[in-house]
Image (cartoon, rainbow, N blue to C red; front, side):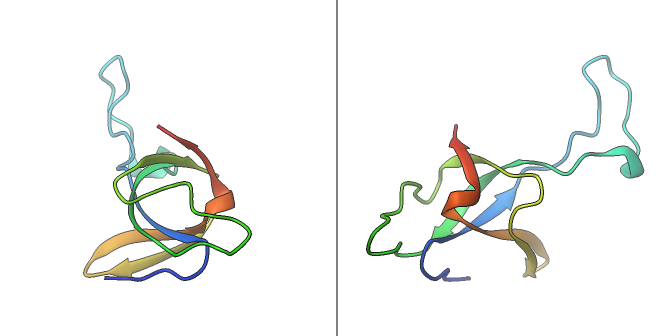
Length: 88
């Protein structure tokens, strides 16, 4: 597993919607990048900025935030705590 440093957080993005509310299927080329996910790991934080999120939280993050990595065939996202917009 990845152990993030400082104020970084490892997030598993939620799957993109494959069907609209009315039942139409969305092709892969038209899917939007998900902006919601589950926190898998948190760094220790900074001395002047403690961590507000914890493992297991569902969060919303910026559309173009973070760095995508693949670990054990899972796509994960590493973001700074300041890139997280809200805890759900």
